[in-house]
Image (cartoon, rainbow, N blue to C red; front, side, top):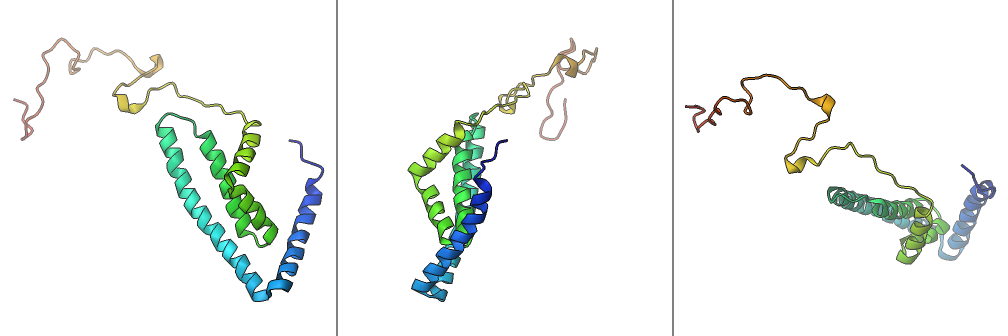
Length: 168
């Protein structure tokens, strides 16, 4: 995996820029208002995590039960959850970036960039869905027996039980 040579610079410069922005906003709005804005953004991020997280689970389950791979849904949910994480972090630059990620056209561009680098492959067990009533076995999963209790034997079928459990 190739890491960008700018990553160490970004890891040092981002917190410094966040601190400088907090000081600048604190100088204009006051300390209490600045702390209030940071806390409001953090609670908004937590609410976004909760709302998007549960909604994402429902959409992924619906797509999986429909037989579709939820790649787009997972990528969109991932980007929105990153936006929620950025809102939780203290600082205004991360909040601006989070709001950009929540803006649908920006989110679609990021998802397209991520999706172009991903390869999705699925693995199937070779079995049919269980709701069609068919049990599909491989050759090594069954054996033939001469069982006289089998419903497919030459004997007449056993009648189903009545309400009392009698088979007569």
